[in-house]
Image 1: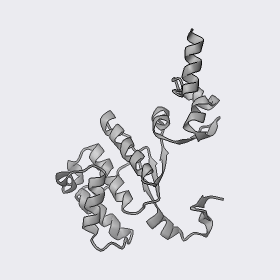
Image 2 (image 1 turned 90 degrees about the vertical axis):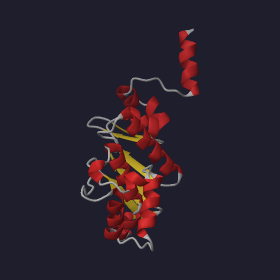
Image 3 (image 1 turned 30 degrees about the horizontal axis):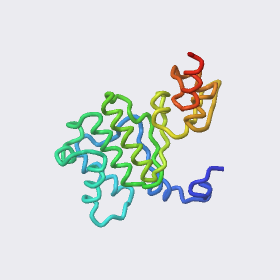
Image 4 (image 1 turned 30 degrees about the vertical axis):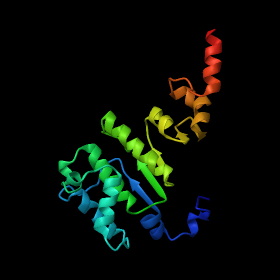
Length: 193
């Protein structure tokens, strides 16, 4: 049974859950290209039936929160970079949830700087109390940005903390790095002596 905030999802109103408790960002952007970033977010609020007195003010707050400036907020989606489009998607997702965010390969197609910015945004959301589930094939990025790892493959699976993953047989098989923890660093230095 899967629990969300102590309640079985089998007993939840799934429309309410999907509309107001969680949001997903897919690998493909799924933004309306002829609309601005602001219009994409406010339209999403209308579709999700978000009850907000001033949707445009809330949408601007969210778009600014994810790092878009006033010019970018009012630009059509096609005029934004991939990283800016991904930020608009994140703002759109945040208008529907403050609890659970599911990300499918959130940095696909982004350059290294935009990828790092996206991971920092996601970390900040986590610090604000939003649970983030991120699907990624980039194991190194997952280890660097997650608190827990669920690794699924044909022959292997693992669930635990990032530290436990680094020490697991599965983690060692997929990573070419030494664990940075003090115990491991001390052990590594001791073995070099």
